[in-house]
Length: 129
Image: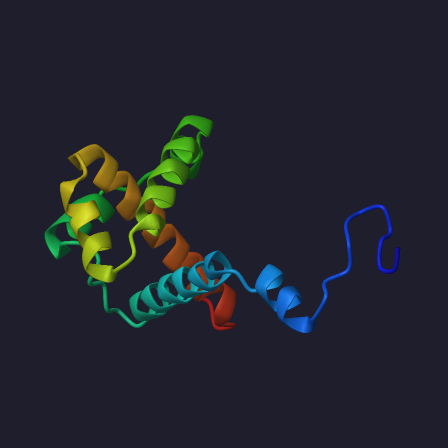
């Protein structure tokens, strides 16, 4: 029994390996990651087109203590919201998702998003005052 090692049989040709390792889900995940990286990069440049600017101003003008924000309950909510957000296939569907969220959930997303943007800026720039 050539090619058997107790963990399955050896693929008959290279196409089977490619089919097993290059799944559409992997490609989709890379596209989602690239889209999020693009959105965060645009935000580091001051272009924030995911959220309504009045919502952003309202949320960010109120300081939030990090210990208060980064509770287990909030992080679970953010993770669930981000998962749903990332599942949306297009930028337009992502924007619609955010618009349709209740205000408290949208505010949570805004704060979490801008926390990511701030950390991205801090991680990529040496000049800090």
